[in-house]
Image 1 (cartoon, helix red, strand yellow):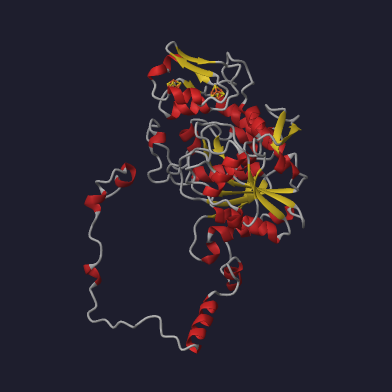
Image 2 (image 1 turned 90 degrees about the vertical axis):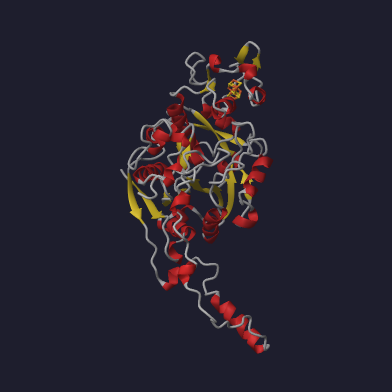
Length: 471
Ligand code: SF4
Ligand code: SF4
């Protein structure tokens, strides 16, 4: 049976069509307000993004939902979890560092209007074990304490790609983002399979290691929080017994352009399936009907907000989605991203090697991340988390005087404040704040219009954009 997914696009031509007001509308259209009873403690689960990441959710878009949780009588807190140390300069490995990172992205109590909490505590070990008898791979999850103890949750995701799970939407926002540290290790599958088949361990190709000749060899060793890596004159040595599969060695090696520490391709689909099991673990902590899912599908970077940089998106901004079923919602998002045009210039370095790049209608994340993204959805159907079929309900806000005023900073025009200020100044016989300037001579506009810049633009080093010029 199909589940309903509400959608509104990112286009705007007037007040009612701004993204934050439309997200507020969608919150009610999808009846997410019914998840919240008066006095409920409500987790608003977001991804705060990694330090130096510039395509994260914006505080205003999160505050818009926090405001409506409060309007429903809920007591919201915005939350995310600590991470395993999956790269050398990871900025969210402790609760304190993560709060600094959140603040740098504007996620503060002042901006959001509610507390910001790290759901699994300072060291990431505040969790509750949840059994998963229907799990496809995982039979247990370790859910972050603040989510376990909240009465309701708005799972507020940013839809984008992911280097391990191919796509990250609402399932990932709780499937990885709702787990404590040991929950994340658990779903990284470090102890799944055997060292021989490599699925649960880093895939190491020692002959690809430059050893002491690698500029990054010291960082490579230091990047292992388990001290499992030694690089010496005899080569690269990994103690798999110590490894917890944090990804740090792979991230160092891959992103510095080397091929020693990496993954086997089979790892990626299975990691998606484990993530969906872990998402089920979070949902099991709430009574039926107490979790609503929303996602902003904007800044659709091929990589996740856990990557400490951002690149050009794979598609233009698409809009906002809301549903009571996170699987149907993610399914709709993926279909919309694939159906969307290719972002100009977005087929950049990451996609070199794909003949012709990717095109509108293709599975964009399968190409950009080399793994199809829907393993997570089929696993989520099998474990009982949700359904992939959806009825898409497109929402257009009414352009009425009442609706125009509804989500403004004040519901009466602020022009009236200014009018009162002028009246006060008139009353005090204040001088006019400007002088009228008569035209002595009116300069012809043509003298000031920009000349044809095409010859200069063609010299710009932005190949994909500039190729079209002058055609
Ligand atoms: S980054 Fe890669 S090539 Fe360099 S030392 Fe580490 S494993 Fe070897
Ligand atoms: S060896 Fe294991 S624990 Fe160490 S950095 Fe690599 S993945 Fe992480």
